[in-house]
Amino acid sequence: MECNDVILSRYSVRKFLPDPVPQFVLTEMLEAARLAPSTQNKQPWRFIVLQNPDKIKSMAFNCGLIGLSNFFIRSAPCVVIACADTEQNVKINGQDYYLVDTAIAFQQMMLIAWSHGVGSCWLGAFSEKRLKPWLGISDNWRIVALSPFGYPAEKQGLYAKVVKAFAGSKDRLPLDKIVRYLD
Image 1 (spheres, rainbow, N blue to C red):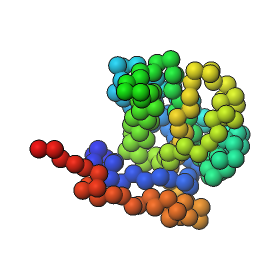
Image 2: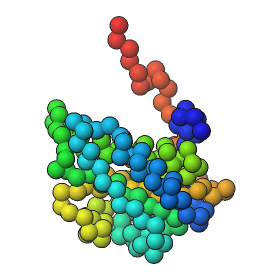
Image 3: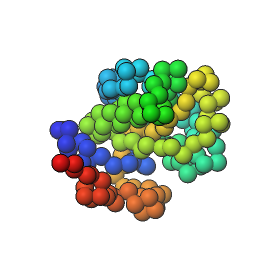
């Protein structure tokens, strides 16, 4: 797939086939994240990969009350948790860049996944307070986002349809609302 096709066709997948993500695809995904740009090349991103179905189900139940909205991840063949080592942070104009850097890396991972037909769904609904101890990560790591990965099921479930309608997933602001040219 051409880069433009990947970007224009990608969507959030909430129902997956049980087929595992091939190791070569997972490696390409992680390599794409590794090669992402970062502030002062600090590379604060850290990724935790779950492929064991029992671990994925257990993780889903350790996302806290807010994470219950993401119960669909229990059936995903792979989940990646995007974390950031805050000791590799750069602060500019009062802004922590570990969040930006990790988000860029995670998005690159998702785009490479989609180029192989592997869907994802960026999730921020989780309780970091509950999930961090379950993952056993150090205090200086922050969980930025997580995503299930897998091949999309042909038919979307009712849950996916409701969430897309509620979130307005197809709605995008026109360019004239988000771009300002200075002459």
